[in-house]
Image (cartoon, rainbow, N blue to C red; front, side, top):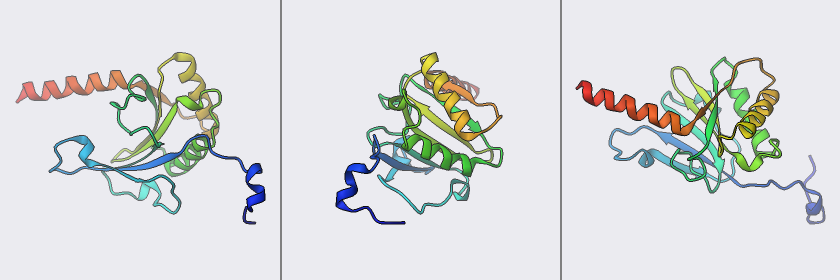
Length: 177
């Protein structure tokens, strides 16, 4: 592989966005969810594959100006495409990262916010988008399914509906006590 010289810079494909890798780890002493969230780096190579993380940890890669949380203004009105564990999540993680960073969701690259890998008993990947507009969501989902070359069913969830469900579950738990 040849090094790129100063004269070649004009011929290099530059990324449209910068990205940040986020790490979240549960801490019983944290007061807020965000106390457990740490920005690791803006550029990465040589990181552990997500399946090697300890259960209960997450990896997130989002555009640098977007935090991996529903409350971020860019994420607030959007949702996420969910991919459940089928033994291929490490491969899917890399395929989605490359398609996302490479801007393969044209004309909706601006609507792709980031990716989250939740390492749990039943791990999952979610691709976060800034819109819940049916045309945008379906186009991104269709391209995602194509890039993954999978027949598996992908599910879209609006962040607003998920947060309402979690609030209701939390209220039921409090009422049950």
